[in-house]
Length: 242
Image (tube, rainbow, N blue to C red; front, side):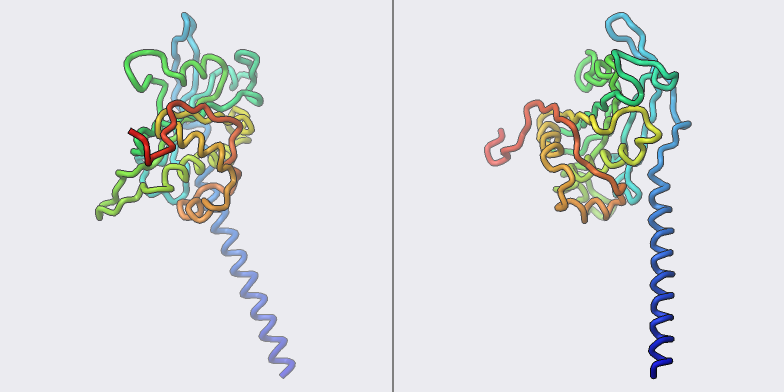
């Protein structure tokens, strides 16, 4: 009986170690999919106040391992070229530059990853101003209330918007050793519903309430708190919004 018990415990322990090893390998593989390819970029320039600013653009990056909608769960990142040469912009370096994190959500509708172009009219975008002043720009897309899958199931209902933004923050932290910019100085920005989400992102950093949703989409195992929020016309009181 003792021999049987000893053998049983030994086999059980071995199976546990094998299972742990398999899980570790699986998590490692998933983690690798979220590592940023710093060689996959395009170069560009943008004018601001008569000065040309050179930058590298990393666009269309899927920021989760198990995306629901790759049209929206992507992020565009723009980095001043000087940071790849050991230079500085406006007193910032690759290590100290804050990260401007503007979303494009309006009306709690889905918003695609933002570019350097102005959202309205042909004026200068906030992202260009940020880039010209030495900030790294990382503009995430997010699902919204009208997203549907091929079967007509709504896939962007609450809390999808904020979960996606949190996942994008986690992606930046997951790649902090590769990407220029200070991930302890992420500044969220948004207008209307995007402003409300910007405020919520700042107020709910690292909340455990969102963990099941973040795990489901394969978000990086990182923190999602941010440094500050820039909030315009936030629509937070939906009972009385007009």
